[in-house]
Image 1 (cartoon, protein in one colour):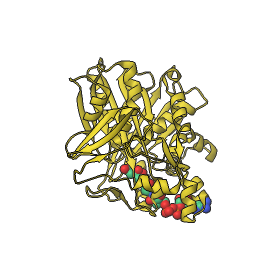
Image 2: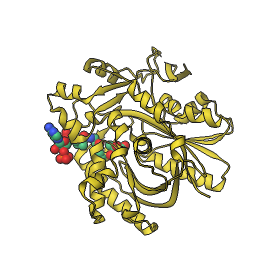
Image 3: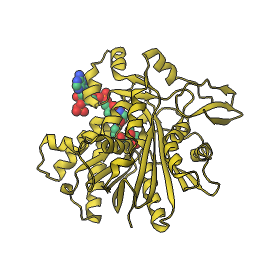
Image 4: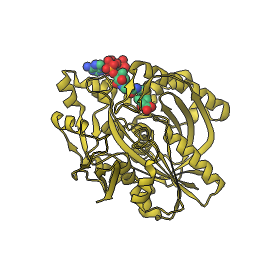
Amino acid sequence: MSVGIDEISFYTSNYYLDLRTLAEVQKTDTEKYYQGIGQEKMGMAAPDEDVVTMAANAAQPLIERVGTDAVTTLMFATETGIDQSKAAGIYVHRLLGLHDNCRVVELKQACYSATAALQMACALVARQPEKKVLVVASDIARYDLDSPGEATQGCGAVAMLIAADPRLIEIDPEVGNYAEDVMDFWRPNYRATALVDGKYSTKIYLRSLKKAWENFCEASSLAFGDFSHFCYHLPFGKMAQKAHQHLAKVNRSGLDAEQVEAQIADSLHYNRAIGNSYSASMYIGLTSLLENCKHNLAGSRIGFFSYGSGCVAEFFSGKVVDGYQHFLHRERHHNMLEARTEVDYTRYLELYRYPDPRDGSECKIEAETTGRFRLAAIRNHKREYIAV
Ligand code: HMG
């Protein structure tokens, strides 16, 4: 019996800022962003959106198909937590109308936590193959204004149904892990934006890739040449390009630059238009690969490198299932990205600074999102979510 990803769906906000606009305001060359970091647009959450509404929007199409009673565990990965105690997944559980007997939990380790959720979900399903686990990862990436990280902001959520005999990707049990206590990127509880040592973080990312890959090679019989494509954690597209060149070099792959690039190019399209969505980003990258690759990927092995600052990294692998093309949400995803509204710099600042009351004061939030779920108000320290 195989276990893995049966269906995958993502969501991002209906607003975006083109990095050309940011470059103009900062008097920077737009190509620094378009080429230098490999990003074009960044998603900006509407005032009535947060990680809960984005996650519910991502998961809704999967639940519509399998029904509300099919999911026995909901795992919510995020580093944009809205509560220190209550799991964000509980709100999603209600919004989606999931069964009372469903287990719900939130996981955190920067951008890595969705991979922990995926692996735990696979283990649960391997033990009880009739069960289905819903893994959601949802984040809003925020850095200080005028900081080097600003151009790498973004927002998005991904939902994956983990099941036996999956229709998209069979996840192999062998993994390679690496963990190290480093301060490359972090967000203390009292801050809304991340602190980051940007250049150092890119070095740690590459070091973790090599270490996780070496550990993977001890566990798995697969070699670099067995993979047709790779999906990397995507803080920005250029990071994945550098990482993959690094891995190809470490393995003396013999591939030329074009061949190396071809192994990741299709995984970058969606992220280029959304920005960093932290825990969701690698899985939105996988969706991009499956939905945009012109070749039939059935039977191909994909290598995954998941990285979460702080840091925890994991290299793992999966095989694309025959007929996967029939179970994608390609058209809906393309339409969602096409239908978004570009914001100007003034509106970007309004969205960036939208009040997020921390004193429990009453706050009614006007309807703005085009998503199915919205945050309607905060009253008595309680967040009020509704379906539109
Ligand atoms: P910076 O220092 O402003 O950028 O920000 P730069 O000066 O290094 O330029 C970037 C690239 O653009 C360079 O290319 C320039 O040469 C090029 P490179 O040398 O790197 O190949 N460039 C141009 N190209 C074309 N035309 C031009 C031009 N000008 C310059 N005119 C930095 C870069 C990464 C520091 C910043 O974006 C940042 O701090 N980002 C946030 C941190 C980050 O994303 N780190 C990634 C690794 S850590 C991670 O992935 C985890 C994370 O997702 C969080 C989590 O786990 O939760 C962040």
